[in-house]
Amino acid sequence: MDQNMLMSLPGLEADELAFIKNATENLTEKQAETFLALYRSKRKESQMILILTLVGFFGVHGIQRFVIGQIGMGILYLFTFGLCAIGTIVDLVNHKKITMEYNQKQIIESVTMAKAMG
Image (cartoon, rainbow, N blue to C red; front, side, top):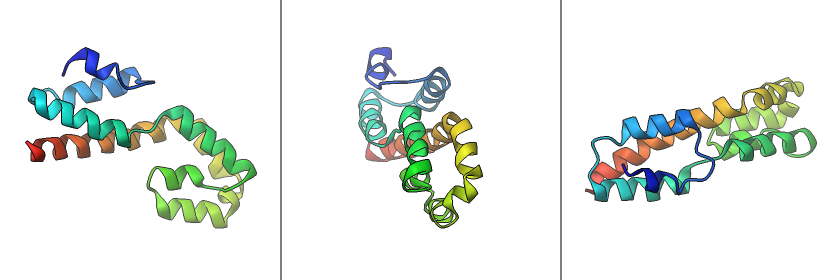
C-alpha cells in the first residue's frame, strides 16, 4: 500500500501503521483504495475514546464502550455508574489499548471486505 495513501489517516500511530502494512501487503491497488475508504469510515482515534471516557465521569457512563461496539459493557457501565468509577478509571488508563484493539478488528474486517469486493 502506498505510503501517501496511509498518510491521509489522521493520528495514525506506529503500531497501527505496522498492522495495516502487514494486513494489506497482498492487496491490489484497487483493493487498497477500497480498504482505505472502508477503514477511514470505521476507524476511531484514541483521543476521541479518551474524551468519551472523561464524559463518562460526568454524564453517560460507558459511552466509550457503546461507540466501539461493546454494547454489553456499555450497558453494564451505564447501570453501575462505570462500575463505581473504577472501570472508567481503568478505561482512562487503557484508552490507547482499547482503541487499538477496536481498530485492529476494523482493519481485518475492511481487508476482508476489500478482497471480496474485488
